[in-house]
Amino acid sequence: MIGRLNHVAIAVPDLEHASETYKRSLGAEVSEPLELPEHGVRVVFVSLTNTKIELLEPLGVDSPISKFLTKSPSGGIHHVCYEVDDIYAARDALVKDGARILNKNDPVIGAHGKPVIFLNPKDFNGVLIELEQS
Ligand code: CO
Image 1 (tube, rainbow, N blue to C red):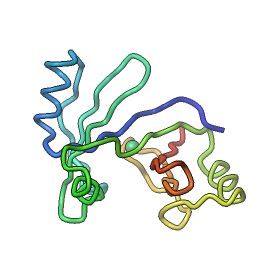
Image 2 (image 1 turned 90 degrees about the vertical axis):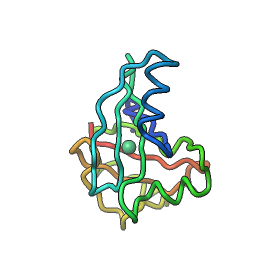
Image 3 (image 1 turned 180 degrees about the vertical axis):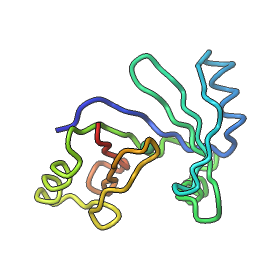
């Protein structure tokens, strides 16, 4: 069912500092920051040849990243995103298999303007998985 790794998302306490570190220490190509209020994040994209890394900083009081950073103040891997051909077929197969999907099983429009679902980490080895329509 799953295809390419679309991105790995890393929660960071300071987006400018994290961007600088990726540029200077790792020689990475890093985009300008983008605010996504509907997702409660500021984000930069680190382009790699085979995938991308998203550095996420909390935006607003209800940011899903804030709680994560309370537990891991220096940041950490927040989720991984795999591509699927058909988000509804993937959703239906996962529900049938007993997996729990956040947001009452309904796809939402993700950070790249495509429908996504998030899978309960308890069903996947403690890792939050995002599936994105490719
Ligand atoms: Co993501």
